[in-house]
Length: 221
Image 1: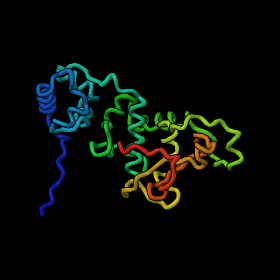
Image 2 (image 1 turned 180 degrees about the vertical axis):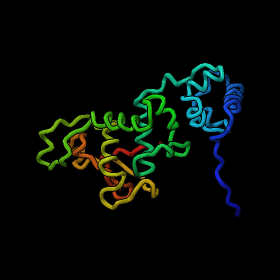
Image 3 (image 1 turned 45 degrees about the vertical axis):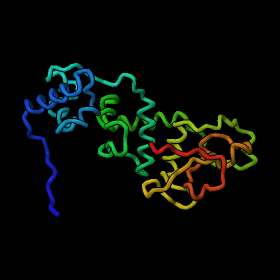
Image 4 (image 1 turned 135 degrees about the horizontal axis):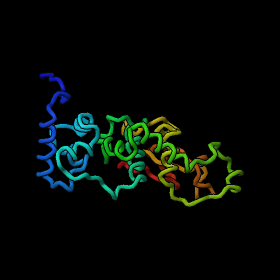
């Protein structure tokens, strides 16, 4: 087995970077050269062009190509994707984690929308916290006094349960990154009056949850 160093493109001439951008544009069509599609077909990563020219849009301008962005992609879709990536990794995603293996969108997509990867994470946490509820877990007697809400667990609550419980089964400690299939479970079953609020939800693995009916499987993405 031979070991080879990863190739870096920091010293590639700007003209060569622009030529590659135009080549991909000709392959796809200028109107569809999004960051995601460029990274699928190009020899260089979009971050190489963004650093060289100041931003992805400036690189498109320098190449004489129209600016492209998925205008139909909502902020909520970006955040839902982060929940899925967080689940797969069992921890807060890092910039380099947003690969096709784990994520539907590249880190560059988040940079373009929010200005930086850090700002994207800050916005994500703020978004999730908008759905925050009291964190004290209720007793059976307390549950009847609280509004139940719908049985379905929305993405904000999924995110909060995931961050609070660390993408780990609260009974046996199994994690998604070890292959465990995780669920969001009502502590007091919804069918028995339990509310769909943060304080009445927890993460359980499939094995610990066998035989229960008040569960909502976390999508695998």
